Image (cartoon, rainbow, N blue to C red):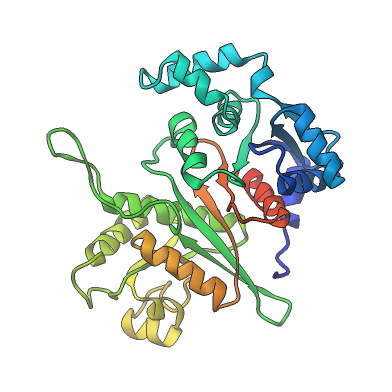
Length: 341
């Protein structure tokens, strides 16, 4: 692993500790991370599950979780209020019985704890799929004002050999398959695909800033400044214009090929005068196929550690773990999730 330091985020949280929900309270990895977080004193964990089962699992692993709150959906005193609130949020799409059944599951229950202000953020997915973590968030937390979609980014970090770290941001590599126009019943475009991709770019750049990256955002394509046609070229080109209008304070440019984004020689040859070309550190892919392949190439062949996916665009920080995660990743993602507040 790289020597990436979470100290700035931890110091921020020590000044204003947040409460984080872990939806899988009996999982050994969650318990190990919880014990470590409690020892640090900068996060207040809530473990969802039966107190007896959670404590037994902690004792079995020799994890000290005293100080963590354990909440059992089956015995939660505020369940009727929570059910009523969820029925209201689902606006007729789920009955009271359906909401009560959903809230018996820790992913929905934990999400509602955040929605009702009992917790600040949530981390799940150690045993749930990404869809089972994201779906309750979309239905209950919903997108923040002005946002039209939930997206994600990865922060990639590697040692450069001179005690410095190289940090990159890549989005969206995990959530949005592609970016099509949204239309109303009459066929009028309500949100363009370019608007959606532009939001991914701006949200990813804002996340990069939390990690100490001064974002230089490249809207990636197989074309640079109109050199190619077809595919997603027009999408990336238009999204560049929209993103520049959305966030004039950010350095965003495109569309450009990856070599133009990272090589100063190639970048300034193909895209003369660009503040991004050749110096990019935040890469926005035109669809999930390119994004997922791209970050995994960087991780496996480039030697980068990947932190994420970090979900963007929600009304509250909710993040998803890989089912193959280890306790160290849970610990890291808990800090990242709380630092997004």
